[in-house]
Length: 246
Ligand SMILES: Nc1nc2c(c(=O)[nH]1)N[C@H]1C(S)=C(S)[C@@H](COP(=O)(O)O)O[C@H]1N2
Ligand SMILES: [Mo]
Image (cartoon, rainbow, N blue to C red; front, side, top):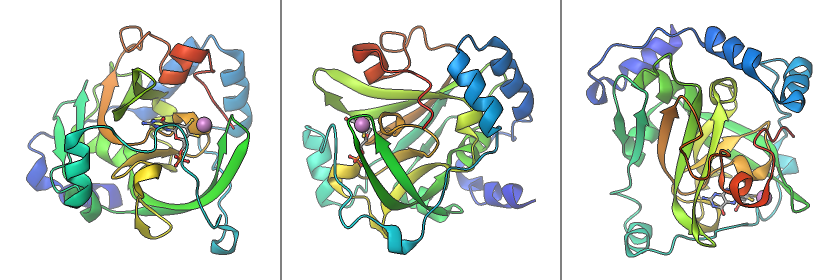
């Protein structure tokens, strides 16, 4: 199996066995509990595996603008920018069998996925970019997500207007083929303004779900105790929908 082989490449990082949770079981449990008609309706229409449209190189936006935080205001970040993020680590933690701490090099050596997609921001702009990175599902399998996990929380290095930026998705979105931890935009290392060195791409969801300056991926059973409990920075502060299907 391809996925098994990919995981074997992480052997040096992982000591535990792979988790055998059934994703479809987690997914249907979540759907059954959904109290959000928009989410239910969208899932019914798109299906669990529906892919966001992918474009060709000819469609790429000449400049993929930056929005929200465009840098991280810390000495550590400034130093990492200069040394190619050699000391940056992405943690995979929470409800997992084997917590991981991955360097950029670890991430680059895993199987990669490249996708050209359109980013839609609620503020009324769109841009098409080519993103390369590792599928989130692969990292979650490597860490062995426990069956009690219902959501994946994305932790970011930046503080946006006084709050630590964060986001979250359910397990269906987390394991979607186009949900990747990206380290490249248009074939080059992620620019600072677009979330260097790592950002989420969650292609069936609106722009604010795509967490930049990613530091940790956390498996949790509930979002109640995270931030103000609504699942993300914008959901907490402005009342944007947690389920942000495009
Ligand atoms: N950490 C972090 N992630 C973030 C934001 C932010 O301010 N901080 N802004 C969000 C919003 S509203 C959008 S539209 C996109 C913008 O991505 P871009 O800067 O690559 O255009 O990032 C999202 N992810
Ligand atoms: Mo946005």
